[in-house]
Image 1 (cartoon, rainbow, N blue to C red):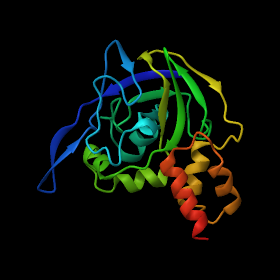
Image 2 (image 1 turned 30 degrees about the vertical axis):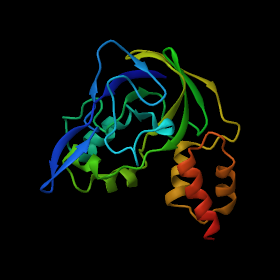
Image 3 (image 1 turned 45 degrees about the horizontal axis):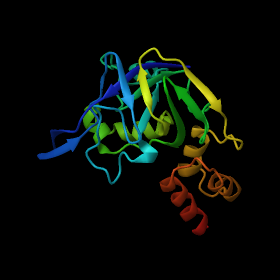
Length: 213
């Protein structure tokens, strides 16, 4: 597993449907090494902290392997690292191989997988495609978020080492499927609720699913 690119952006204002919108989704690659801290990378930021950022969404990770899929699907050759708003573009970390609660060493830092990504309309702005968030969700190629357990410098080219596998081994792909396509699976939801590494927001969502059924 490898860190291909580190991408950051401070929030900026863009025009969308005759309104001014603040967003930090326009990530661009960083040269050299950058410090990863509890809430984000140096030089990075989120515009709306009610739905983005925080301890459990400190870093957004997206697999490099998905780039070829989207190039073919969309007929585009202009996709660059950070295209999907990710902080880390990585190789060898597909959603069916990474579990909620897994812990990774990335450069000098340590981080834990907390949840899949669910896009908002700002991804549509970035892609210049109003329908793209729906395509993104339908593809299951979501990427995932990390919380930082140990701060440290990271940089493109760093090896990524899995140092702990969550004992329940519920993959990012499985958790995403459970949340949006298999909501009646009480047994799996109960298992998800036992995941110590699952973010509080997703824990509450699954608890609500269980209570409604």
